[in-house]
Structures are given as C-alpha cells and as structure tokens.
Amino acid sequence: MGTPTYHLFVDDSGSRFIDHPSTPRHDGLDHFAMGGLLIKAEDVDGASEGLKALRARHAITAPFHSTKIRSRKKEWAWLGVDVNRANSLLTDLGDFLCSIPGFATACVVHRPGYETRYSTYAAHERWQLCKSAYAILVERAAKIAVRDGRKLAVYVEQTGPKEDRDIRGYHRHLRGEGMIFNPETSGKYAPLEAASFAASLLENPNFFDKSSLMGQVADLLLYPLVKGRYDPSYRPFCDLKAAGRIIDSTLVPEEENLGVKYYCFDEL
View 1 (cartoon, rainbow, N blue to C red):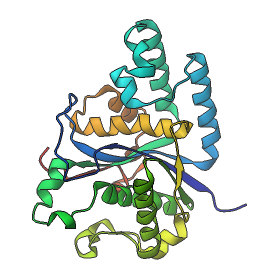
View 2 (cartoon, rainbow, N blue to C red):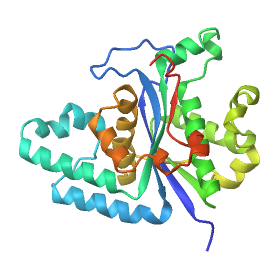
View 3 (cartoon, helix red, strand yellow):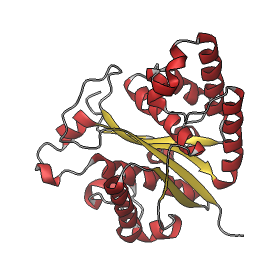
View 4 (cartoon, helix red, strand yellow):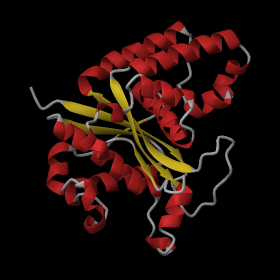
C-alpha cells in the first residue's frame, strides 16, 4: 500500500490578466482566484456518489456551474420560474457542500490591490495572476499534505491549450525549483524547497472538464470564498464557515499561512 494522497480540485474565477481593464460587476468583485476542494483520496468516491444522488433527487442533468446558477441563465433559467423546486435544490445543495468530507481552499487576488502593489514594475515584468495564485494555492495544500504524511495530486479545470500549458509550467517549476517568489521577501512564509515539492507533489497536474463531479464541487466552493472576502455576510460563505468546511477551521494558530490566501486586499 503506497503513501495516501490528498486530491486538490481547482477551478478559477475572474480575469487572470492584470493589464485588462476592470469591468464593473453587479456583485462588486474585481478579482482573480484559483481554488476549490482539498479532499482525501479515499473520500472522493463517497462524495461523488453523494452528488450523484443529489442530482438524481432533483432531476438535474446540466453540470453545476456557479455563475449560471446565480444568474439563472441557460440550463438554469428555471430557477427563476419554479421557485419551490429552486428552493428545494439550493437548500439540498447547500447542505451537501456543508457536509462534504473535504475543505474549501483558495488563493484570491484583489486585482486593483495587485496593480497598486506592483505599479512600479514594467508591464512585461508583472506575472499573470494565475502564476501567483497557482503557486500559493498548491504550496499551501502541499504543506498540509506533508504535515499529514500524504502526497498531493492536483486536478485543474481545462481552460485552453495555452492556459493549460502555463499551468503545467508552473507545476514543473515548483517541483524543480521551488516557490517562485523572492526568498528574501517571502521568508516569513517558510516556503517549501524544491526537494519537498518533489517529494510531496505528484509529478503532473491532471485536467478535467465540466462533467467532473468534484470539479463541479470546486466551482461551487470557490465563489463563496471570493465573495466572502468582499462581503463577510454572504450567506453561503457564512454557512461554509459555520460548518467548518473552510480549510482555516482545521488549522492551529501557527499554521495561519496554510489557510485561504487573500492577496493584495490591503485597501479593503
């Protein structure tokens, strides 16, 4: 029997390009985030079966997709018409997410804050936000895996050939060279060295599409983590927090740098 693993299912949200102008959103967010679900490998099948059962109970055929559900568009337009069925589904779905045997985790970047912090850098010297977010997210999950005597397997939603190629490059860098940040300025975070990444992080990221059940869970968990930083009273965020489903609830004080990372939120 080999070393047990954690599975990290990763979705993304917002624009990864810092040089793209912000488009005002009705929810007040201006961010890029990567994150979703950290779960023990042996719990994945049970969680998947639970989501399958929920889908069957409510006769759901479309993949769960947070943006479409919240906007009540396309396959989810019925949510704005059949109120009783909608309330039944959303209550059941919320209960499922608050009881799943895994934890919500993410790195959330406030784009205006990032722009302000790195405004002295030339445009070509500033990274795409996914580079920072992926490194921070995976490192924190890898540290938890090391702490618990496990390895870490990463699963990322497909975005496109270039974007997926970038993710493979970031992953390869972590295993071969360690964290991407300046060690002089990031020393307080005790960054993992390349050898620790190579020992704990499985060699290649895996990619999934929207049919992936745990990928759908990652999508549903990520938005509350984002929205909750801008509006701590956001109910799905409060529910996840009260249920102990956010990774921070598992950490002792000296592990504060293993929790959800809110990056460049100095102005908020």
